[in-house]
Length: 238
Image (cartoon, rainbow, N blue to C red; front, side, top):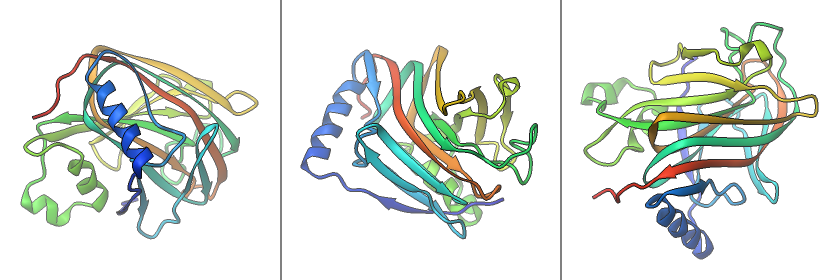
């Protein structure tokens, strides 16, 4: 289905501004960069037109996403592009998707409990004609690129339902901008964790977190405990 996004931004207070400045500093040197999952400062909380939105809440355990027949992404734009060699993610799912075996990702069953997407830069921009006809979520995606640059894709790393899905990749039928790889499934208690390596390193502009239960009328909650990157030195965008 075509999804149109409305944008709601949480403006950081003094503490949030300090945290964002700290994040910016870490973007410029090698090391570990962790998304601020214990606060919604700096996040863009989006929702789709005609689809009930998810609820996002910062907790001591991490970012909690409550899904009730709903879908919505949370986007964390980076102040400067980040070059990464590794992605580490962990979390927990309470509840489940109502999807028959072997159907996840198909029409009518295109729901995933969690998709962690990396927005990658490129030369692709929207022409004025495309801006007139493109869905709002596409316009918001391109707005993440610094002036004079574009987007190549969002590469999603999905938590699926079946071990046999792990390693499966596709270009999403909704848009060639969306590429997905299923990298993990939760254990019996709902815990999931995965590590993805990038050779050569990936360059990213933002992190796009999505949880979907609208296709299958599912209700569940996801808590993201960690989203971390191993980074390489980068320079400040001029």
